[in-house]
Image (cartoon, rainbow over all chains, first blue to last red; front, side, top):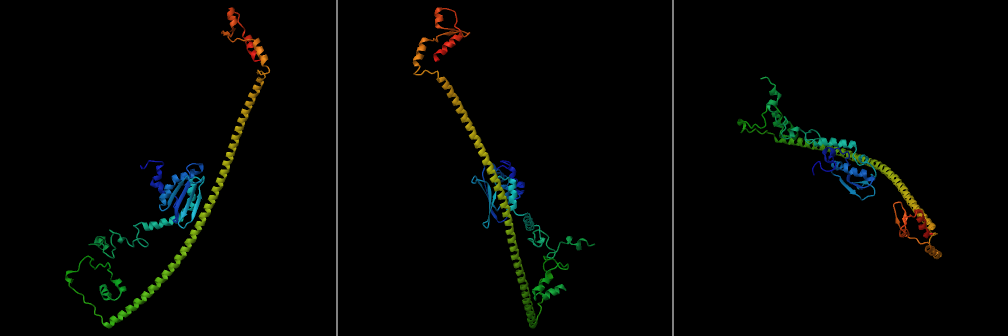
Length: 167
Length: 225
């Protein structure tokens, strides 16, 4: 599909997908959304599916997201957790913004947790980091870097003894 | 001096081996430089250690190693114990926090669901009311239409009843026949632009005297009486 084809192609841009606010808890496994295509009370749910579902799936690749159309009298969301618990959210006649706000509050990770996770990921992910708690203890372990001078002497032009001495 | 220490202590203990790791001493040649040609066949003389001294050193070294191992194991076990207790404490703490978070979410969600339910109930009642009103309006409209048609029919009947007084029935049939026989009417007439009638008798007489329209009208109404 061409990039600018279809309805609201902005939904497929990386900036839009990354702007998703809802990052679900790790224990949440399945996110199911029931709604109808007709009726005023389904407008919010329909728009939620149209605008926010791409972001949610992009931000939560390990969560199964199911939408079930025209099988329910009123729209609702049901979330299944790994230990068998469930949460049912009634989204009858609610605008999409309210729905996403409520989901962030209930099934989303809190800001503190997210901040901690980001910090941990930064420390582990960045291969340029070295030292205590990182993948490598010393930069000299990386290929192509100058070996530690305790193991192999530096070339003479790098050593002050030869670089600064008065000949 | 350093070299001599390394050579003398190298075969004795592991701990002292740390000392002979190469340092960046400026009086040493780099690692990749091979043995000097003049020293290729030089075999260093092994240090001569007497049996008694060797046994003594072994004993001391064994003691040292045993004690060090014991101490190391002691500290290691202690550390493990501490970590285990810490981990269990943190896991309990985590579980407690998680349970709290879950109850918070549930209460928030229950409140949300309750408000949605209430709003839906209100909406349903409102819709039902509107439907009832609309049904009432429809019923009233159909009633009015029915009433109008009844009235229309009644007026028609009244009119017909009025007319029925002039109808020819079996009772007054003879009289009507006699009346009709007595007053024959001819519709075989001509009419001019002024609305004047010219009957057959007029044309046979070739008389130009017109019959006034009023009189013809009177004649026409007679048989129905």
